[in-house]
Image (tube, rainbow, N blue to C red; front, side):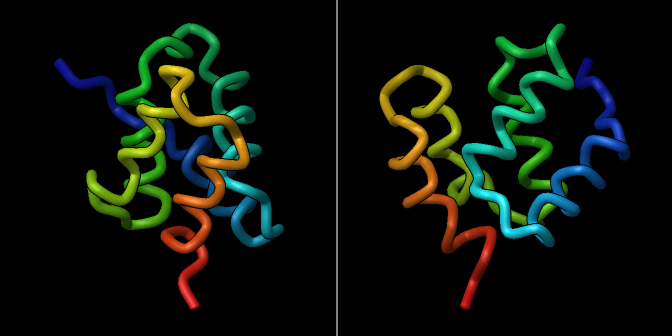
Length: 86
């Protein structure tokens, strides 16, 4: 069963976007909020998809970040254009 997303977390992500936060900062923030689910990268991807109306392909770099294949700056390079389109 898929857990429901917390609207408060989604609102925090949207507020962080309005404050021009980097995607890596957003992920670190929700990792703290969702301490029990911190190992579940799928949850992170679902929150980003829901908050920013993104596709699975657009949020897929989150998996690489979660697995340690991407550092924060690399993740930001992939997601900035997706979250903050011109």
